[in-house]
Length: 246
Ligand code: CAA
Image 1: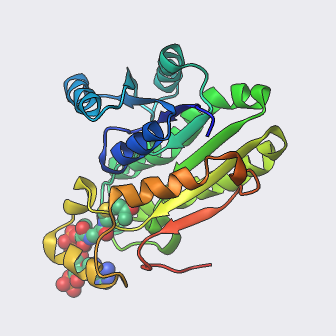
Image 2 (image 1 turned 135 degrees about the horizontal axis):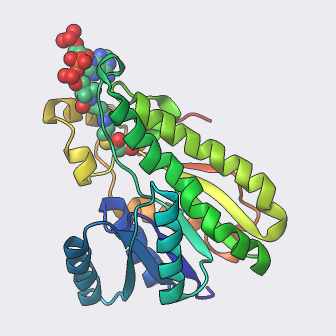
Image 3 (image 1 turned 135 degrees about the vertical axis):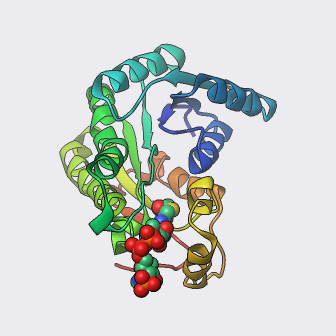
């Protein structure tokens, strides 16, 4: 596969780290953003020990100006962005009748506004170069909804609406835009769900287990090669059979 320049937002997180490792192991140059410098530097050193040279740039994807600066920094480090994985995301779970405006806005800003803020910085370059891959990391809960996640499910469903519109606008420019919708993966985010609630959720997964981050990275990699040029506007579920909508 041709070596490309890839930006993975939220690359230091559970799923993000696996995506970064997968892209780097495929020979791509990879950058990610961070907000906590000490944590990011330690993460970068760990990546180096594993043989992956990953560029890290400061920036908050929920803010347009900060996103512009982080993309500039990433491009200075690895070159024009060919592959963008909008992966950064947070949860602020709570039943809707108790949800605060802050819980709502923080999740919409980080999970959905971020797609606009970051993608807007790279789209012109991809269109000029006539090649691009844009992948949203959404969620099973954007597809089926989830008790306690009106904010998160709204943002994650919105991400796929974003995908299918961008896919139409950019198909003629060699750019594919797709969504990966992970189910419950054994990351810190899912482990933060109270154990008894998590046990009930896991019991609903036909494979009988949580997913692994590398199983999501594999789904992301599927969209990258030139052979995948015909696949655009898709929503690829990777959820152990937990939700089989079609
Ligand atoms: N269906 C029906 N009823 C449910 C329910 C469900 N799925 N979940 C909880 N309830 C019920 C409880 O049984 C309880 O009922 P009673 O009052 O009759 O006993 C009631 O709801 C509790 O409601 P509260 O508003 O008091 O809830 P709470 O404040 O204790 O917490 C919650 C609610 C925060 C939503 C908690 O249940 C929770 O954390 N749920 C998990 C949410 C979740 O799946 N988050 C995913 C995080 S990981 C992620 O997002 C990654 C990804 O993409 C998959």
